[in-house]
Image (cartoon, rainbow, N blue to C red; front, top):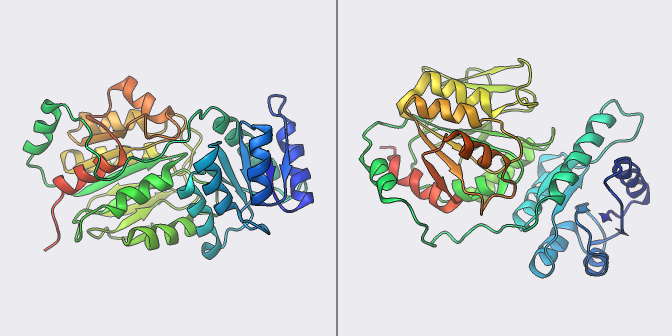
Length: 345
């Protein structure tokens, strides 16, 4: 089902999506209120949702759909202004699966790329059978005693935390960052797969939602304790010693630039036992082999558990390789970080 108040956009999305023989549009709606009713009547496998609409906007509609009739929902938005893309991330927090850029028409040079991205994302979302909710922060989760003991007895000083995330990642990142203790002493480097143009909005949303200092990484910037750095659009991000960032436009890896694999490989080479690597929800296998490389070099390695992951591709690949020492939900990841990393003096 397509939800958009513009008939032109609705027709364009219908054309793009039905160009794939496995996709059929069963309904369209022009506002959030209508979308809620039509979702109950037509039972779509996936909903594409605009944000700004009359009567009821996309964020409110998603919240109501997820609480009454959960259906995987993809945000399709034209707004890449940082002040406005915050709404897209609030929609992700409300339960949307992913965010895509709205195609700008068949004559635009990026039309084919944007169209393929929407088709791929919708097909991926159709495989999400349950819309997951993150567990409450105070819920107890089982840890094997041997693993818990091994974690608590390590004496290495952690100098850097590297995190990779794809589909479903932004709300998990927000939960993890929001729970970090005051004066958290290690810098955090993040590669998040996201549609071009949405990163500045994500940074603003993470800042306001988590209370942590978050910024887009720049070349040779010196890493500061407790600060969060996200890889910019179109650039691989590496962590070098002394603690600084190096950006490159080398070839894509695993179809991605930035790639999680590049970040993890640089951290494995330069920080060995003084690093923590975390791989979160997402499709594909980006970063899984390099998380194993980090583990083999002595780093602590964590993967998000499948139950709390929107898409289990990257966690499943990590499991196959035995790359992670810990398989944890977001709340426990935060607990691990707070327990292992000290505070700034």
